[in-house]
Every structure is written in C-alpha cells, then in structure tokens.
Amino acid sequence: MKQRSMRTLWSILLALGMVASTLGASPASAAQSLGDFYNSTNIHEVYLTIDSASSTNLDKAPKDYTAATVQFKTANGSSSGQISIGLRLKGSTSLEKLSGRPSFKLKFNWKDLKGNRFLGLKGMTLNAMTQDTSMIHETAAYRLFNAMGIPASKTGYAKVFINGTLKGLYLNIETPDDIFLSKRFADPTQHLYEAQAFKDLMIGNDAGGENTGKFTVDEGWGTTPNKLDLKKLIEVANISSPASWWTAMNKYTNRSLLIKQFAVENFLGHWDSYSGPIINNHFWRSNDKGVFTMIPWGVDQTFGENRQTTVLADDYFFAMDAREVGYPWVMQSHKKPAIPRGLLFQRCLDYKPCKTEYLNNLKLVSAKATSSNLAGFMTNTAKLVVAFSNDTAKSEQTRSIAWLKKQQTNVANLMKKYGIK
Image 1 (tube, helix red, strand yellow):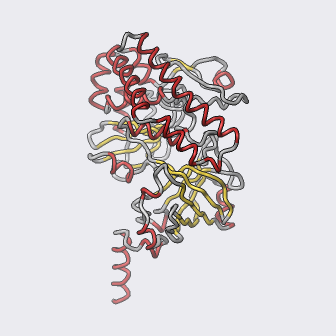
Image 2 (tube, one colour; image 1 turned 90 degrees about the vertical axis):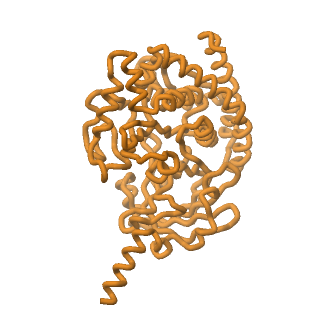
Image 3 (tube, helix red, strand yellow; image 1 turned 180 degrees about the vertical axis):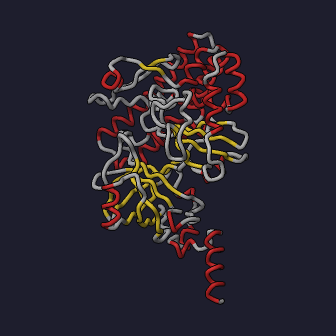
C-alpha cells in the first residue's frame, strides 16, 4: 500500500513538473533565467554528451530524436547541471552529419521525460549558421520582426561542445511551440502548422494527418485531430473575387499583421520566406476561432547575401513590388530568372487596398530599422562574435550593414514610384 502511494505521488509530481532535477534538470538552473540564453550581449555555453549508440542513431536517422544529455553554462559561470534530453539533427539543404557541424533540436520532454522543462521550455534550436556566413543575419532579422510586432523568436549565441570538443559558435533560437505561443497570444491555440518549401495554400493541400501532407501539425493535433481550419484558410486564399477575398482575409487571418510580415520579409531581402519565390520558412498558427497568424522562421539567408557566387561582398536584391522574382540559384533550379511568389502576397499586390497597405508598411519597416538602430545592433553583434569570425565573415558583416542602407534607399525610391510620402 505504501509503495503504491509513493508511485502515485511520483506520478503527480512528474505531471506537475516538480521532479525535474531527478529527471535531469539541476536545481542549479534556478540561478539561471531565459535572459541568460536569449540576449545579444554575451555568449553562453552548451555541452552536449552523446554516447556511441546515440551517435550511430543520428547517423542512420538524423531527424529522429535519440538520448543525450546537455549542460548549460551562462557567461557568469552558472551551470544547469546535466539534463537528460532527446536530440536530433536539423536542416534540409544545410543538414550535416554529427561528424561535421550540424544544427540541433533539443527536446526536454522527450519520451519518459514527458512533462519535463528547462526554465519553462520544452525544447531549444541550436543553429550552426551554415547558411549565414556573416553570423549576424539571423539575430538581426528576428530582432526587426519583433520590433515590428511580429510574433518571432528571440535569439542568443552559444559555444557548443560535443563530448568535450568545441564545435563552434551557434545561434540559440527560441523554438516555436506551445510555450512560445502562450507567451505571444492571449487566446487559445488550435493548431500550429509547419509549411514546406513551394507548398502553398492550394486546394487539396490540407490533406494528410499530423505528420503527413503539405502542412504538418506541430501543436494541437491531440486536442483537434483534423485540418478543417487549414481547409478553410485555403478556401479563403483562393476566393476569386478580390473584394470578397480581402474581406474574408480579415475574418480568417490577422490581416494587418500578415501584410506587415510581408513588408518585413521584403525589406530584409528574405527570398526564402512565404512572400519570396521559395514560399518557405513559416508557420501558420490558428486560434480556437480559426483565425490564422503567420510566424516567420529560417531567416539566415537575408540582408542580400549572395552565396551562389564566389565573389566576396556582392549584394543580392529583388524587386519588392513584383509578383515573380528570382533568388541566387534560380537559374540552376528553374532555368529562368524569376518564379511566382506566395499566393497571398501575389493577390495582395493585385488588389490596390492591400498593395497600398503593404507599401506603407514597407516605409514603416525602413523607418523602424533606423529608429531601432539596427545597423548599430549589427555592428555590436559583429564585435561580440569577432573571435569566431574569419576574414570572409568579417567581410560579409561589413557588406550586410552597408546593404541595409542601400535597401532603405530602394524603399525610398519605391515610395516615390507610387507617390507615397
């Protein structure tokens, strides 16, 4: 009877997340805060321990979580102690083997650790910045999204060690999940959908289950195991009448925030976004009323970096008011200089009230880059990561800061083109 009571008490404590230290989270983590890991003024340390069996698992199935432990150390020396986690590799075109310098997904509530948290988080994303030569694009881009009121991740820099060996400097990116959503939305979340590249809001793209189809479900399937809200969004996206489409978009999306996001994406030169030609790197979050908000992701290839060429410090720009644009590798992949952008963005450009709102938001974004001193932030961040910056990175940092000013000139010229003062 006593033994059964102890098991019951253990289950209750586990459900309440009160046994984190026994499951791996150390009481020392109480001295740490999320501000230690998501800020732009210092570099923390992440120590991953991966045994041979888990290493083999990651080589065979890099996107499947496997057992590992992690220890976090802040800049002031505070340690979390060893924490048991699930670990997998991250990336598509940027995916690297464990022997290289891969990006990682950490899950604190994996399998028998269900209910476990670290400083309230269920997981972390450690990005190797493979597609960000400058090492400052991502953190600056997310900063601008947040400054414009877009629900976007916070970031911080980390030195990552694997079994005691330094792998290099990583960006610790706040992971979009139900914890993230609860901090940014007052209303209940119904679903969080993760989109795939080139898979737009076309009729039929709501097919599939939680982990199948053009849009997979990261949050909400357990409570609402269907995609009826996504089906409705797709119907709205394809309404033929521009005026009816515009009205329906205001009912089924946070329309003003969506148009503002288009403006930030275009200002950043984010061709790998929804409003870009890749129609990629975004989440759709629906509330319990079926109203959707878009969340940005994957902002590493921004600020005009042209990784397609071997020329250092060359800029890449695309038209901010065109239905079709290119991207650095478009000729290799599509054999033509421009391809269509996201459906909703195309429709916005085609309907004057939407286009006008978008252009005015572009002007606001450009002004925010100045008022928030984004160039100064990028300069200071470059100084923070200087120990990890080779000559190529330093050149790209300098180019990116100069590109920002050029893009503001491009926006000013666009305003003149449309008579916006």
